[in-house]
Length: 459
Image (tube, rainbow, N blue to C red):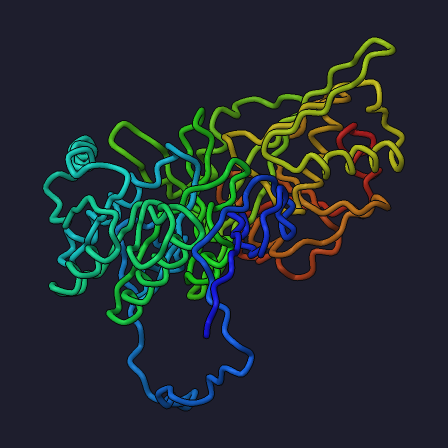
């Protein structure tokens, strides 16, 4: 006879423990173990090799109908998705509270509905009247969206089963959904996993593009079990600083397209507006050369984006502890770069406070930003402005070498299109520069001391 056994589920990582502990043994988080529904433990003699239905195998090259993507009408949203919505796909979108997730999805659902396809928006956090009020403020009140306020997955799936499957189904949010077949409150690991499984199964069987909104924890990761990110086809992150108007939609996982693709939006009074040329937006206000400012051609997926790196050096009195503050870049990488500049170039940052900022609320993860940050630091230390129309990129090694980076030609072509006339980067750039691209004077450097000479004007 089967017997029941207690188990405890970590609310941070989904790990299972058979006794309560103050700290999760898998992710080391504290006070996250919550008792789950009793698990049934079967005997080891229980045989699963019979009693099931035969599985039909198919050839890999068997003929099948191609999946046609459906455009949402928002070009930046489609770009981040890899070209549009794939029928039968499951998309998980996370982001900080108030960043604009619901606004973006309501706009996408409205454009899909206005194009002649059906769109269903299910809100578990707001009443239908509240969503209707927001739609009126965004100018979407006339969009033929089917709106509902519900949290029961059984009720939602029963209602959807009585109608034609929609082209787009938005669930806002998965942490508010509840299944009466699973014990536990909404938002627990078992509820999130079970509700997501049922909704994804409906989407796969009926060719519906499903979008699940997910809450995030205080460190920015999507709340709930980690298995939720494995269950879906696409994981997207909606990022941005509330003090800035810019919002970036980033694809972290995409089974139907390239990862690290981004879509850029600007928050306006009438909702989110697309930004087709984000480089001009991030570089606005640069009218004269200033010390400590360098332009870096970042690469997000297949899109080059020019951003401004700003550095400030403040000399301190002897005995004071210097401070290092970073916004939009890795603080550990800044410490490494300062050590290389001191060791290989003889510069002194130990008695100065160092402040580094990526303008516009942008966050950089590209290792090619090393050279631009180094140029901004040297410029701020020497109080010598860099050329206004120049770009800087390259990875700096611990030995002070400037290493080649991917897609150098694409970065330079984007800089040339925006009116930049000079570039500085790795000496080994290969044949990536297209001779038909806009004229741009490029100079390669091999070692970091060569960068100091160029900034100081002594080369």
